[in-house]
Length: 238
Image (tube, rainbow, N blue to C red; front, side, top):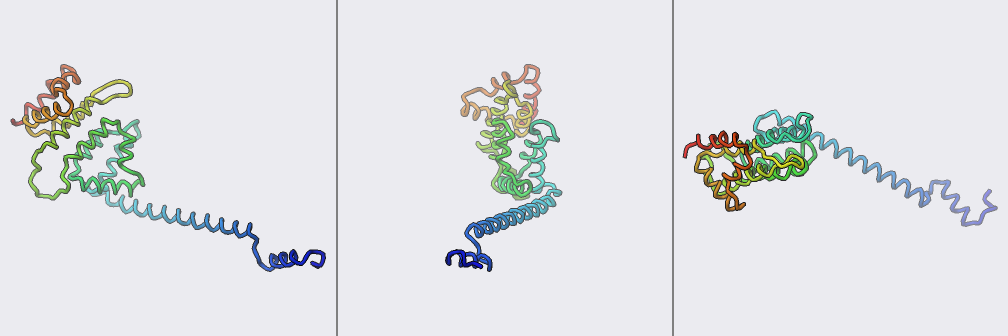
């Protein structure tokens, strides 16, 4: 039946009929295989991530756990559905972290829970002044924390952190309008253990920014607010 075709064509035709594949068919089947394998890998990766997230979620019911802190930070970003980030909740959570080591654990837990970078979310969600404040809070924490260790002595790092946080509070803006983060000022003042620590912070503030802390406080706060803030300091031991 193939006598009307040249010999080489008859041979090719016969090979095709008995199961031979053309180059086009081989490429098509190869592409299907790649897509299938790629899809399987994506599905498997998704299942692994979900198991990791579920396992991490189970840890978040324990107060003081890295997963708990990570979840609280995520909730601060979500802010109960309201616009913006609940910066007070975030400040409180980061302040409660006992060490830089725990902060790294929180970053890792956040990645497992939400498949997102905590630091990148902070960069995207916070104003630069707020982000700098959070970094300043973290900077003074010990590398590791062990229960029962003596209270950490104040160092120049603490004064630098407080000065940096106060400057960030003064530089706060609300859209195009300049403003002051009064909650951030209050948080710093409440952390200072003595009047002397406030004075030392003022010295560091002057060296860092070339400005007088008291003068900036008076400029940033309303005249009726200033006495109540300073009362937080004057009620502390010298």
